[in-house]
Length: 201
Image (cartoon, rainbow, N blue to C red; front, side):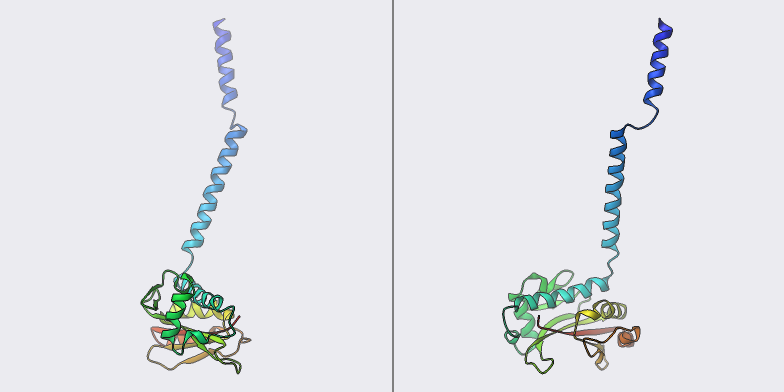
């Protein structure tokens, strides 16, 4: 009788150690899935360069200002200078005008490199005050190159002004196709100002 009991116990033990139950397997798969999702999200967040972030924030400044003026025919209310335009946009067009890592105080926007970002009204295609001019100063060479490439399709025209140098129109028409040589002006100084024009939506 004792032998029989021992045999039964051993047999039961073997059966228990054959593998994972369906519930255990489902839990393992769920845990692996959660870890994979977190890893991918972490990679995408960490993978965003300063240039990508800066380019998106410049575009956010433009988009927020355009949305603010969606019910008007032009951007006259921005005033005649980048200073008045930026102050107006910050006061009236929402927090997206100066998303972090940019900061805003006293009607000005400071980008993540310590340079000024401004927004102003301008004229295109024979119109008056019918477009926005966004300017972003003090961008390092590699950031300037990345912003020009990444934001090429979002603007009617783009101008790069190397610090201490002359302004270079790198995109003159909305139909211009990007080529690496287009951003060469970014490389002629350690920092540069990116300026772009966007028509009213």
